[in-house]
Structure formats: C-alpha cells, structure tokens
Image (cartoon, rainbow over all chains, first blue to last red; front, side, top):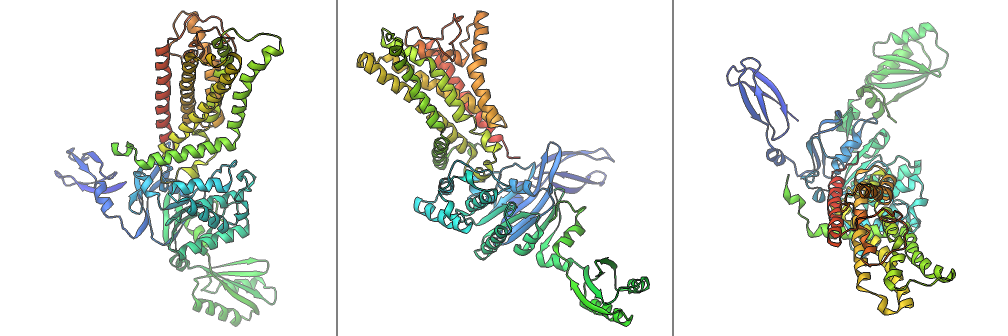
Length: 364
Length: 274
C-alpha cells in the first residue's frame, strides 16, 4: 500500500490518498468537488529499486484473512549471508510472512522477492535456492527418510549419486544416520522435526527460511540446531529465522525484526538493539537486614530509578552507565551500609522485547 | 493474468513424472496396491472355484462367464478409485505434508497432475489384473477362442470408467478438508447416490444417459450377455428400462473424466495452506 499526498489542481487543497502500485483511483476534491484520476507508481519502477545485495526483499506486504489483517504493510530486507531473526508473540504474523515468502499464501497486496524474483509470480524460479522449514510439517510416515529425501533431491535436480551422498550428509548433521531406512512413522516429534530440517538443507540452499526450528526439540537438539545455524553463517547462507525464543535469536542472529499485530515494531542489529537497552539492574546484598530508614536512604539516591527486593537481594534499576554504578556504590557505603555483594546485571533482549511490545504474550 | 504462466515447460513434465513415481511408491508403501490387488485376484477366483464346489456347471459361453465374473468390477473400480485418489490433494493439506511439498521449485499443478496420473495408473493396474485373471480362467475353461473382441471392448470401457471415477474423487479431494471425507463422499456417491438417482430417473421414465454410473453398465452390457447380478452401478435393481448407448456412454464418461479433472486442478491450485 502506498500513501501519497496530492494537490487538487483547481483549489490547491492537499489530499491524502492510498493505493497499490500501478493502481488508478478516482478522486474528488472535498473542497471544490473537482474530479480527477491518480495512478500510483507501477511495479516496474518498484522492481528497479530492488537491491541485488538482498537475498530477501519484502515490500508493503499485506495479508488479510476474512477481514482480519494478519500482516499490515510490512517492508524489510535480508542481506545476502545475513542471519535475520524475526521475532514476535504467537499470532504476530511471523508464520504468515514465511508462508508468503514460500508461496504457500498469496499476498492481499505487496510483494516478496527472493534473489530479485517475485515469489508469488514465479515461485518455481524464486524457490530454487531456498530451503524451508515451516511450522511442524507433516511427514510421510509410511516412507523411510531415504525414500522421502530422494524425492526432494530429484525435485532439486540432484543426480542419483549426489542424492545418496547428500542424504547421508544431512542425516548425519541432524543425527538421524541410523534411521535412514526406518519408517518415519516410528519417529518422535523431535526426530520428525530434524528430518524436516534435513530436507530443507538437502540441496545446499543459498537461503534458508525457517520457522521455529527448535520447537519440539530437547535441550541438546536445540543446541545442535543453534550451532548448525551458526555454521550456515560461515558458509555464507542467508537465514531468515522466525522464532519467539529470544535466546535463540540473540545467540544466532545478526539482525532482528520485532513484529506484533502484523506490523514491524522495530528492527536493528543485535548490537544496536542491545545498546538501546538503557535500563540495567544492580543486584546488591548487605551484611545486615536493612531497616525502613535504610531503604528510604537508598531510595533517595538520585541515580536510582527503581528499587525492588527479592529474597534479601536488592535490585536497583539505573541508567546502565558504569560511572553511575560507581556513584551508587559510593553513596551506599557513604551511608554506612555494609555491602557484601554488588553486581551489575545487563538487561537482555527479553527486557527490550517486553518494553516495546504491547504485552508479554508468548515470550520465552 | 499472464497466459505464459499456464504453458507447461519440459521441467513441468519431469516434475509430474517424479510426482507420479513418488505417489506410486506411497501407494505401495501404504499397502493399498497390495490390498486391492488381492481383491482383484481373489474375486474372479471365487467365480472359478465356487460353481464346481457347489456341483454346478460354468456358463455355456465365455461371454456369459465373463459377464458374471465382472459383476464386481464396478465395486472394485470405485473402491480402488476412492482409495488411490481420496487423499491425493486433501491429504497434503490435512496432514500438513504440503508444508514440505509445496515450497519447492515446481508448479503445484505438476504435483497434482502427477497424483492424478498415479491414481489412474494404480486403478488401471487393478482393473488389468482383474481382467488378466478372468482371461486365464476363460482360457482354462473355454480355450483361447473364449477370448472375444467384446471382452477387449469391455476392458477398454472399464479403463475409461476407472478414469472417470478417479476424476470424480479427485474433484472431491480438491475441495474437501479431510481425506476421509473426500474418499467416503466419492465412494458413496458412486456406489449409492448416483445409482439411486438413476433408479429415480428410470421410474420417472427419463433416460439417465448423463449419469456416469449408468454408463458404467456398458462394461458388462457390451458382452451381450445377461449378467449375474451383484453390486455396483446398474446392479441390484431390476427396474432398468434404459440401456446406455455405447458412444454416448463413452462421451459421458470422457466428459466426467476431463471436466472434473480440470475443475479439480483449478481448485487444487487455488487452495492455500492457511
């Protein structure tokens, strides 16, 4: 959706209008009632501005489901070789975005490009270099991993020897080597998920679009997948990682986009985001139990934003600057309080997430 | 609408071929082929073994024998068509296997056409085995002279009827959410609903030439012999006063095949994994 301000040629009144690229709308000036037409800049102009540096480019993507706006005019890009975290609570629009990027859904308006190709117009070309893992896909439980992966290898035009070799490789990566010829029906959910991951990397994709990859995995499996994603980075693979597990995003991604209610709330590199977190905590323990007066004295320290107590530990919120931390410690000791432990706790992505989202739905 | 998007390329045919092979493998692994094959062999064997066991003679002519042997062919065609086609499309959406299958560099129509062709091949295989066993029985009872041109015509009509049955179930599979629903609706429509409608038309003295199950009677009618009753279209009811015409029957079966296949493909292509 494009929003424009146009001027009435007759009375010069400014009108705010919106429409899709290439769309022509009829206008009527509310002041002088002059009528006219306006055509929004077309697709050609837009396509020209798509950057070859971007593996994924999303422009003004909107998706409506029976009047409900699941995705609202979302625009972002993923640079080649970058790992982008797509974060948001359940129902934020993450999976909808992924389904639009893989042509499982058609956008109501806007475009999704992969390697400069419109996914929804020419999916067969756009998806050649893409590996995808979406939700928890079903598996053909009456087949073996070898049979299933052989089919997908052929779809990606690998030859027979290559397929057999790659199957062994990817099953080793996801730790399913011993299960190559066993019926998938006997697999646990975690194993099925790992098999789906194996399918997504079978053809050496240049772009990986993965949706909640560690859900359903045990802690060891989660760690393996995180390491695998980091490994992709070293191999120059672009990864679009949708997740609501913030630790996973912080540990693996270069950049993060926060999505809520179908809209991008904010985005930036992990470092930028972490630098934006200005409220940190100092955890302090005292030798003796503090009196009401002592607590009042602490609260009166101007550098302290907030004070909380939990199991005898005092949590002091402050601006995060080292010099402020030093000033607070100095003032505490000056007041005769016997500090036995004083440590600064850096705020995490979770704190940032909670601070920018409307509520704390589905954050782990 | 870009018409170029609808012109198939060589790759589309290759992907369709891969889809056919993958579907056949799935049918085989799910033992569907084996179960229906067993029926295709066992049912004609009953007609070979039961009469002598009851001390009865076989029919006087080979065509009469075949007609009674084929009493169950419609049931087997409908059963095979429903089993092989019912979950072709709806299954991918219901079981979410489409999340693996669709985001691949191939047209969805190649995948669906491959599924359709695999269902047709599987159903044809079952029909062919049924006829093969019947032919072996005829040869052993009546000699090679028992294999008539009418039998070949019956076989070809059975293949055409099978294809129309697959198209009908394929259509339901493209619109239904659950595989079991499309399978059962397809099965009961062909086994019960259409034959009942045929009877209603017949009682009303309206020629039901346009009902595909009525035209399926050509499979036995073409043999020019009275059949031995049984199940399936045209069987079990003695009210039939209208016999399907050969060429109009072929036309109707072909029309069902083509029209429902095309509608099925269009609906399947429009379906999205929401």
